[in-house]
Length: 271
Image (cartoon, rainbow, N blue to C red; front, side, top):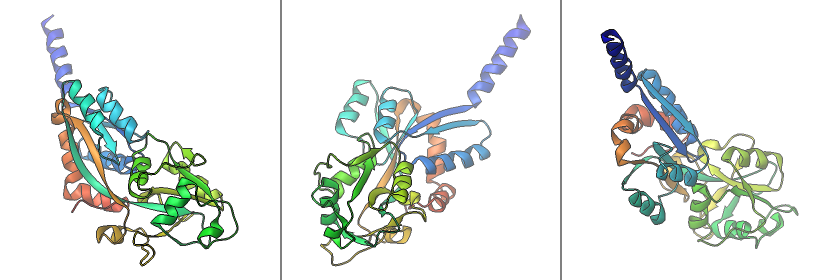
């Protein structure tokens, strides 16, 4: 009996050394968090981290429901969400882990290479329906966006559309990768994605927020020097009860090594 008790204690001690964490939320943050977790687990053999997407809203809802340890978000937590956290008897911590340039993309065959904020607003709210209205060919505009649970959806609406509603014909996609694929296959398409998702099969547009005086294309450099106008912070949220468990991983991302991964993965460092 004594031997069995000692064995059970040893097993429990071993289990306690394994840091099992669930991270869920923003599809924008997803590839970065996955890479950070991969490197962290190689350095910390006892760590177990699973990272899944679904959107910022999904991640924050999971945090409130205590089904994830960290919520990834490309927008700030809403007041209503903070209230739900408080109603559950807890508090949340917000950590900025990186920044991201939000790129507007079109098919490479599209001759349009730049748009003003006002033109983008017109396209995504449905007032501009043909590319010939913005200097392009006589071709219908096919508009792709994210689902309403996405932080990118909220950020684009607030900062580019001036909080005007998306047009009813905007095609909502379940993930950022789906927007890239759809735009790459559709000549008249337009969409918005995080800079890290921009590939050779789509074209990132120059954007002007000063009524066409200057146009800047998204890049790490233009995001860092703040000449590109659509840049946003990316967040981790976690509850007070999880602080001790998640802090080593959060601290790793904020470290010099973690921020080097931020740069390598196409995001912008916090410093």
